[in-house]
Image (tube, rainbow, N blue to C red; front, side, top):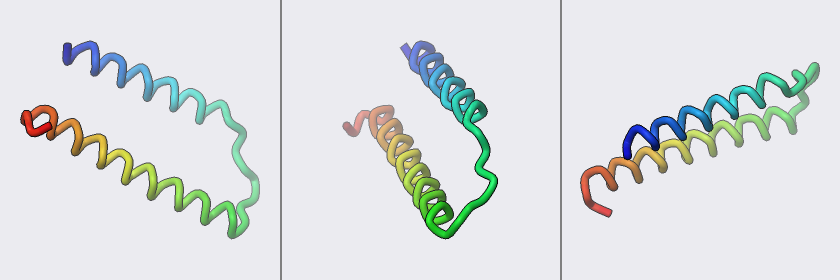
Length: 63
């Protein structure tokens, strides 16, 4: 069961990175773009930590 979850997660990250590599690179960033980028990074980190915490609680049988 754990192997299937790991395989699914690795496929998801591979697809996400592939999409990001295909997107065109912005040539100029203004203040709005910088704020949006920082907000996206912060929300991504918070979401990642939430998922890791949920995984840890499920693994310990607390959920």
